[in-house]
Structure formats: structure tokens, C-alpha cells
Amino acid sequence: MKIRLPYHAGSFYPSRRESLIESIKSSFTHRLGPGSLPSGVGAERLSYAYIVPHAGYMYSGPIAAHAYLQMSREKPPETVILVGPNHTGLGLPVSVYKEGYWRTPLGDVEVNSEVSRLIVEYTGFTAYDEKAHIYEHSIEVQIPFLQYIYSNNFEITPIAVMAQTESISKGIAEAILRIIKENGVDAILVATTDLNHYEPHDITVEKDMIIIKEALEPDPEGIFEVIDKYNITACGPGPMATAIYIAKITGTKPILLAHATSGDITGEKDWVVGYTSIKIQKAKTI
Image 1 (spheres, rainbow, N blue to C red):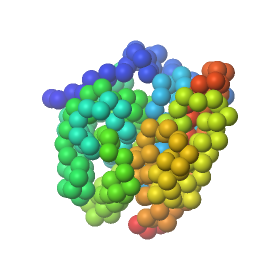
Image 2 (image 1 turned 30 degrees about the vertical axis):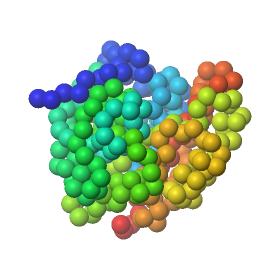
Image 3 (image 1 turned 90 degrees about the vertical axis):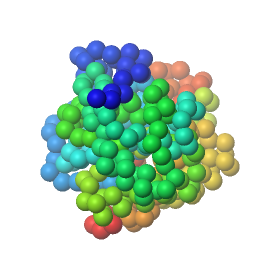
Image 4 (image 1 turned 30 degrees about the horizontal axis):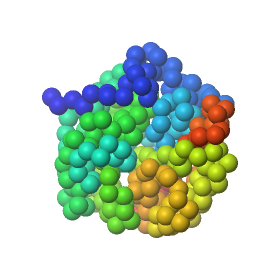
């Protein structure tokens, strides 16, 4: 049995089960979090996708918790398709994890090998590759939140994106919608990005609001345009645009759930990173 080990347990989040659960709970109840714990799953699929941050839990956990509280009120999905930026530079331009299990201190989650296969088949530009995933944190840090709200009763398809372009983002979005519509897979997308990096709080808030405005339009092409125009150092414009392409294709309006910077958490506002959670609600038809 192939197991992807939790490389960032003990750094981005606690390595002990009990401490990890407490860290997740504190993200929900934090003054910048949603303010309450999940109280039970729902019976209906309410969304196609969420955009969440991926820093250490002490920095971005409260903002991510806004999305995960919303997800906890939905029917648990069969599969969560996780799309994150490739920070390590290892592996292929767009790397799909083929099969096996991902382990966290909360247990093992199985990779949906059939959804992975369909992603590769339907896009034509993705490929199976594990190297991109071995040390990558952006996807790993989402899984304990998912386990907390859904237990281990779901599967995942992880996709690490190094080549972040409009065409790749759109292609992944179209493949996901095709998998839902044509293959009947009960899937949801969790796309992850952090926003502007390592500038003062006021500048970061200003730049974050520029990119968030494009996301809420929804204008996925605009995301890439403003990043270049205003030198916004978001690390995951590709994953973010994938979620926004789903909104654009389905005719839905993204909903801003939360935004803050690391300075709002720590009080150190000279050198911060921006975080947001956004919901792509479900349309009546695809």
C-alpha cells in the first residue's frame, strides 16, 4: 500500500492527534475565525468549490476555517479534488497523484485513482507524478481540516500546479465539471492560494482586494492580469483561477467568506502575507 507521509506535521500543524484537533478547533473559534465549531454534516451539495489559504495553522487556520465551516454544513463529498501551487519546483508542470493513501495524524485518506485517471484523460496536459507532492505543503495542510469535518469518509485527488496559466486553469475546471456531470462523481474542489507576500499590511490589503475583486466578478483572466499589472505575489493564481473558471462556466457568483493578513493574527504588520476564503456556490445546472 503506497502511503504519502505527512511531511509538514510538526511544522505547519501539530504532529500529535490531540494537539492537531485542538489546533483545528481553535481555528474555528479564533476571533478571526467563523466563531463556532462544525455541528454536523448536511444532506445536500451546496457548492462546487472553495478557495482557501495554506500557511501554518497559527497564521491562516482561522481564515481557512470559514470555508471548512461552510463545507461542514454540506453533504460529505465522495471525492475532494485538491488543487494547489507547486512551491518546491519538483516534478512535472501539472502533477496528479495517481493512487494510494495520504496520511496525517488523524489517519489515512485514500486517493481516488479513477478521478485521477479522468483528470489526466480529460485535460490532456496533466500527468501522473509523485515528486511534486512529496514535500509540498499547500495540499497537505488541507487534509486534517477535511478529516475533522468529514472524518475519513471521503477520497482525494491531489493536483500540484507549477505551470500556472489561464489555459491550464480553465482546462482543469472543465475537466472537474465534466467528471461531475458525465461521470456522476460527487466531487468538490478545494483550490488553495495565499495572497500577497512579504509587504506591509496596508499594501498587502490593498493588493489582496484587487485580486479578490477579480475573483468575485468572476473574472479568472483578470486574476492573471492584475497579478502582472500590480505585482501581486499570490503564490497560487492558477488554483484560484481554476475555482473562478468553475464559477464563470456555471454562471454562479463567488462569495467572499473572509480575508485577513498574518499581521492581523500576530500584530506584526511590517511584513505580512494575505489570506482569503471564497465559496463557489452550486448552480441549478451545469
